[in-house]
Amino acid sequence: MPFIQYDHKPLFFTLRRSERAKRLHMVVRAQSFEVVAPKRISNRVILDFVCQQRRWMSKQLTQQAKRTTALNAIWPKAFLHGETVPFRGSQLHLNVRYGAVESVLRQEDSLLITLSWQRPCVQLESEIKKQLHQWYQAQAMMLIEASLAHFCPILGRWPKAVQLKQQKSRWGSCGVTQQIYLNWLLVLAPPGILEYVVVHELVHLIEPSHNKRFVGLMDQHYPAWREATAELNQIPLSAIRPRG
Ligand SMILES: [Zn+2]
Image (cartoon, rainbow, N blue to C red; front, side):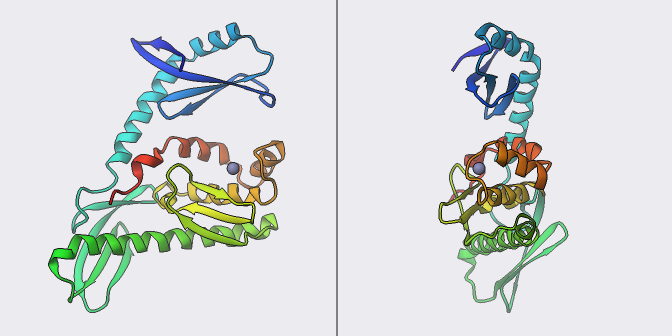
């Protein structure tokens, strides 16, 4: 990958020539940048542009590193009472207790997890994890259904089915059979991000490729989609997947 130096550090970038690009611009990727250039612009002009952007690029990398550190630390070392877990861009405190009926209940910034009296103590952590996993799935589905209820009538399209997944490198996808798959980890992102992915996949029911028509529909139905995309691109999906 080509790079230029700034402040004794390499700034890596790739170049993509695009028929559709109207102007030279740069997209932030994971620890690198993608320069998107209209077909006819010379390499000299591109290189000058990259040089001009060095300060900005360096700043973006610093911010990304901070965000990655914060996101890497999103899951607690142990899933036990008093620890915190991520949800919709903030953190919830785990409040674990025993009771007759098992449940998970959100109370402002804490999550009240009730485990059955009959659970042996040795399985405590794995039980908490299991309950939490179910809770996240249910929350994801609830938020997705709310988004669908809002956006489907506006777009006039309904997916045949919606399924939650834990994809390794995708936030969502739309199959040829008009099925929509969404990554449940979207519930960890700040509000607005999950909603954006839902609209993105719904728009694919009308327009399968990311062409001008697609962009037009996104502009119309989710004007903040560019900001949401940028934010999503900077969340290291592989790093936030829970282990075990
Ligand atoms: Zn897409």
